[in-house]
Image 1 (cartoon, rainbow, N blue to C red):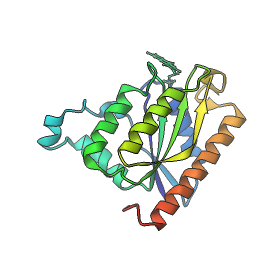
Image 2 (image 1 turned 120 degrees about the vertical axis):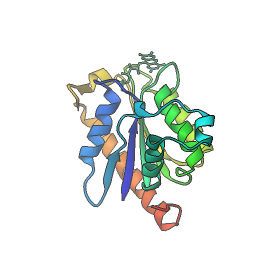
Image 3 (image 1 turned 180 degrees about the vertical axis):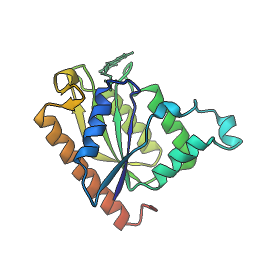
Image 4 (image 1 turned 90 degrees about the vertical axis):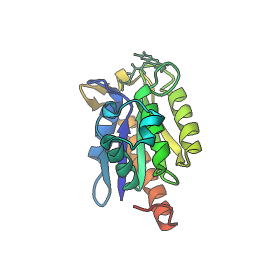
Length: 184
Ligand SMILES: Cc1cc2nc3c(=O)[nH]c(=O)nc-3n(C[C@H](O)[C@H](O)[C@H](O)COP(=O)(O)O)c2cc1C
């Protein structure tokens, strides 16, 4: 059972990156959570570049999505939506098509009380249009600065929520695999 994790924040002290790192720590065999490091390595999507053959880094991302049974997408909220780097990554994923029918779980951590609700709503709509199976369970982490300190989630309720979401995603991925939806 392989889950691919991506984080939409490039910030060194990112709360969302801490959440993804914690998700890796909470994942034990036979499950595996592999993080695709640094979405900032991707060039801006350009349909001309795509047509003439996507760069190796894009092929690498598409292969990682293709090899996964499901995805954990962790996003900050910037200007009422997801981050530019995450949207850019999704644009590159459209052409590959590997995300079709893959279960995807969404997490957002924000310093605001709204917890990144707009970012998750945007991601849910876009990923659904791309053919992904966004699972109904998600995790919102409002006032993240009070719950994440020195690169650790210090709020037990948030850790429990993350653990539960990983279980829900693994269940959905197992079902998708049994139904023959995943080619991993
Ligand atoms: C340019 C900018 C725009 C932001 N816009 C929003 C927003 O629309 N909604 C929100 O909840 N938080 C917003 N924030 C706050 C971020 O959620 C907060 O900085 C968060 O910690 C970013 O995630 P990270 O810690 O993973 O980098 C914004 C922050 C910045 C720097």
